[in-house]
Length: 328
Image 1 (cartoon, rainbow, N blue to C red):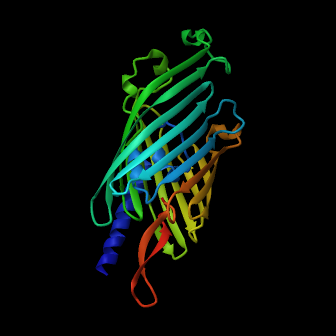
Image 2 (cartoon, helix red, strand yellow; image 1 turned 180 degrees about the horizontal axis):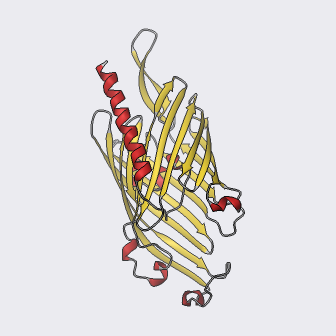
């Protein structure tokens, strides 16, 4: 009875923190935007890469604001690889982000180290390093001020370094994470690059909790908040249901921006396919057919990364282990 009361209090405290942060933090966005962020944590938090059970590879494609010329298009390929000692992890990311005449390709390698906070809770620290290739083709589209000196160059190709870091606190059924994708934005001294890269540092705060509603139904509220000084708020709140460890259905809300529907299918123990559709609730809704996002994940190893070991009892009352999805 005491353990049940304690667990209930922990859940109440966690949910209070979750929705407080998602509602009151004033944040903004400059990194690529994702609706299925809960399945894509390794792309923006290097501390996540060692928290998975077995290695995984994720591919994602996002087409934002369909029917609007020059709207964002994002492709991501990444890997999260836990090492054998359960303390270290490695990650790799390639993200291609297109917006109008500008294309940025981010490439980085991540490393994480985790420690035990308690018997069932771990804290992971991560760092990633790499760079971005900035490609701008000024022949694409028309410009409000064609006399701008920067436009005298037909094409711009530049490289700038990136260094990011993050933390990820998690257990079997909840997680909280804080990350910075690039600390070096304020030290860019190339004027051409500085014209396209915001000098402010962005902070990403993520969290989620998994409720076991029944043997075949799990419920997970989650959030992602992005902070960028001087930029508008970017708050994402989502809910997902996992049905029979196979089907995922959910909805998401990006404050003052869009509402989304999410669906996923565990094709096999090692393959997950997810899809989301965004409908804009701001002025863009009149001109756009919404946004589409598809993610395909491959879990390498027995049972796949989505599986965690949980204890139950067999017919003779002895403990045994079964595989159930971790759901993040």
